[in-house]
Structure formats: structure tokens, C-alpha cells
Figure 1 (cartoon, one colour):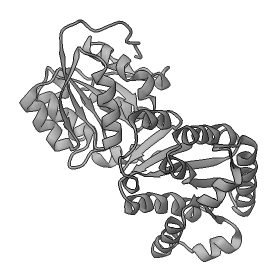
Figure 2 (cartoon, helix red, strand yellow; figure 1 turned 180 degrees about the horizontal axis):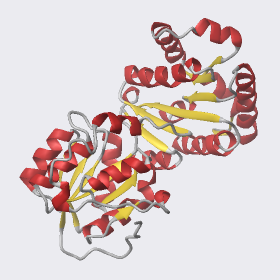
Figure 3 (cartoon, one colour; figure 1 turned 90 degrees about the vertical axis):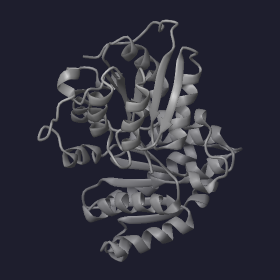
Length: 350
């Protein structure tokens, strides 16, 4: 059941615990909540086990809870919280778009579910609804009839109903245009290796538009994982492009030129798809990171939009955009982070 949560909260204060391991997204959430004087943030944690402990200690009115957390995943954390602080309402904020996972979250005792990339539009609406005792599920799930567990039922042990392996399978569902925010180069290369390696191992093609250091690191990791990258290059199934060179090819007066961008990607994707036996192409793009690191957020957001308009909507591709947050002092502004998330179907923070 998808119930829209309009209207205002009562003027009394509502105590909120924010549980999120991605610092930029946590800052965005807290910034949005702080605009509402009736919402009082009583704690911020980045670990599932710590979330359970804080919930027991603070008994907040509302807990905003991620799923992919260290130590203890959000689904299991929700079950434990329902036992220890049954009066606390839980609203999941997750990058995952699986209908099965939404149902699992509600059965764990949550009152609502919002996908992170939709949070700019639906976060406060969901908070309003959940604090009123109304179930809220994001609009992208419209048409699905979700059934939530009672709080009593959610507080019982549900061993056998849901398991971590099933949760992991749900979290591995592919999306057409993902974004990854990475704390360091090692985590970026880990995800990039899985993304490109899965495509090549499955007989598809892949394109990496990345910095020289990341392209070199990717080659070494692919070889270490047993991918015959030399054959893929010779066949034309793997194409490597320097991100700075790509930027110079389509930037015009500080902004990406749609025609130049479209022509560049059309040629790259066409060549890769023709070489790949199955016609599907995995594309990693790091130009957006370079623009952001150069202090040009407007161009960054516009380029993310062009990926949707000129690539995702037109070609048989899976796109991953990568940002190395640890390489830029000061981190990413919460507004820019929100706008970037809104351009993607899934958000990953490592």
C-alpha cells in the first residue's frame, strides 16, 4: 500500500536517530531534517550494531535506517530494534530498488521505505507519514501491494523467513545507471573490477572512461581475477579511454556539449557492441568526478543528465559513474550530492 504523506507534523518535537555509513548522504539527510524545527536529531551512527545500542539507549521517535551497514545489516538491526525499542518507528533509506527487499524491510517491522536516489523528493514526505503512523513506500513502487508485519510479530525471531544470503542476492540486482561514492581508490577499483569483469566474463563488452591510474589498476586486477583482458582488448570487447581526453573532446565553455558527448559515446558503444557477442555494454565513467574535483558542480550535474538522455535511454548499456571522495579535500556539498543521486537509479557508497 502506497500512502502519500502530505500535511505538517504537529508542533511537538520528534526525536530522530540517523543510521547511515556514507558520510555525504548522512550529511544530506541531517541537513534536510534540520530545516524542520520540530525534528530533533538525537544521534548519528554508521554501524548496524551501534544503531541497535543507540535505539535501546535513546528510544527515539523515528529511526532513519540504511540496509547495507557494517557489523549488522539494516534488516536484522530493525528486528532487534523492534524488540528493544518497540515505540520507535523505522523508515528505511536504501539504495536498493528490489520489491522483495522492500517487502522484507516492512516485514522486519519498518513503517516505510524510500530509495536514496528519490530522497530529495520523498524523504520529508516519508518522515511525515511514518511519524503519523501511516505506512509510506516510495512512488517508484506504485502498483505493488506491500504487507507489513505487526510490531508484535516483528519483534519475534524470524529465523528461516529471511536470511542474509537472500538479502545479498537482492542487493546484487543490476541497475541501468548507478553511481558509486568511494572513500578511497582501493574501494573504487574493487567495484570497478567487479563491474567490468562481470561484463567481460559474461561475453559482453565493456568501456572504461577513467583516469590513467584507475585504468592501469583495473587491468592488473582483472588479470589477477582470471579475466583474459588481452583477448578482450584484441577482440575489441574492452575499450579504455582516458577521462581527461574524453572531457576535452566534448566540453565547450565549461559545460558538456550534448552533440559532442553523444557522438563520442555513440562511436564507443557502437564499436564495443559490435565486438561483443551479446550486444550489451558495461560503461564506467569518471569524467563526472573530474568535473566535480575541478570545482564545476553545474557541469557535473549536467553531464549526469546527459548520461541518461544520450546513453541510458538509447543504448543497451549498464552505466556506473564513479566519484573518489577521498581524493578531494572538503568532500562533496550535500546539495550537489542530492542532485547527483537524483540522476541515478541506484546509489552505492563504499
